[in-house]
Image (cartoon, rainbow, N blue to C red; front, side, top):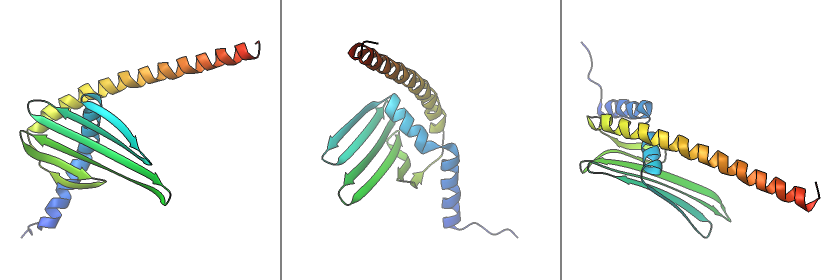
Length: 146
């Protein structure tokens, strides 16, 4: 006779499923590259927020870090809402909610688009860094007659 898993065991299995599917990281990528992304600094605290919304999804990803005089502290959280229902929520590395379902197909399609946008952004960053390095090198050559 098989024993029925306890509620705690079922929740642990569900959390592992969300981790395996990398839902939090995917949501962060969608919010950052397909949504509105902003960063701000107030004193020693830096925070960033990404928000993606469409007719079915509301994906929010936030992070902050504080480099105060007593050391560094940081945190992050991600929430995925589908048709008004929270289907994934995490705070730090703790998964607080995960409800698998048909929403994941559309979510994975969004992630593919966001990954492509991230690749384009990374290529643009590399080009900008190379341009800045070239400009700096030209400036140094001119300053030293080289």
